[in-house]
Length: 386
Image 1: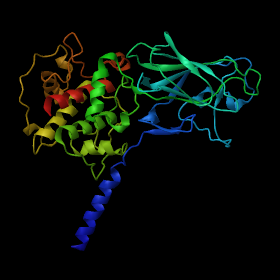
Image 2: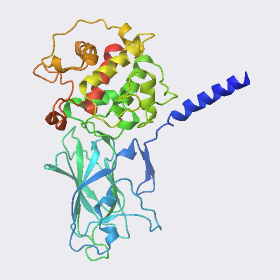
Image 3: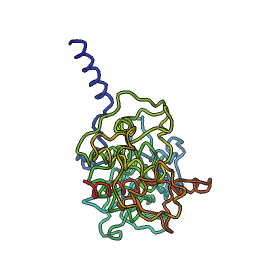
Image 4: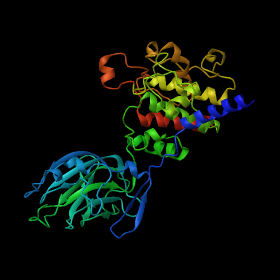
């Protein structure tokens, strides 16, 4: 009895070890007034790419302050410490930053500029959605400063780009121009296509966005690992049951807990006996097949991947797609089941685009599902079948 109890304890311990701790993506900082502020999901809301930098004149000769990439990510300045990085703009210098989130007009201030150094050097701040049309949103007056988009941008606007222009207030110092440590989006939403904005908001509301997609650009193609995580969230929402990861991992290229949950549910399978290919892009027929397995697992007691043939779906077969011949045999039932329920529709011209069949299609992601499409169909799954 003791050996059996010990074995059970070890198994439970293994399961718990595979379950990730609660993911805390909030970011807390102290503002210019000494007040502590917390930004929901703020870990993802800092600039991620330098689009353009034109140093002002004069500019600092200190090389550590000349790298524009030091403005990316979270601020690292600590009073009294020399272990930090920042960019000196130079007198009149211009810096354009890209974000992996869309900055929006929300409650209170919407952008926070972290400027450091002994002089409070101001910058003019503007935002854009396309790097062509810019909206001035005010002046960051040096040190840490928040700005509000309210009344300065079109209602409902979403902006991925921020431009900082030094106002030449201290042109003759050792570090002429503002010293930028970081820029934070205080109010933001995921980057989506216009058609997907409502769907992504619903996905957030339903709890369908896994940690791996928090802060991700939703218009990009989705990987097999990311979709496995979405599938787990969809199953949990449909069934009301928390998924557990598999104890034994057969794959040598992936040990992600969400993949192990999807594998344990029989929702995700490998591309071979020991390979999952987590970073491989997902195509549309694979998405249909995985979500059909989610449906069966959540609604058909006793279903398993091995016994799938014993659990046929009951639905009226829609008219064949024009590219029906390109749909893999193992995915055909799933494709038409999803089409019948208007969960995954065609792409136009009565085509489903199940998989990339040419190098040109692969290069253009013709048949690859995007992250926003994956979340949209997960939302439709929940609304159709819950």
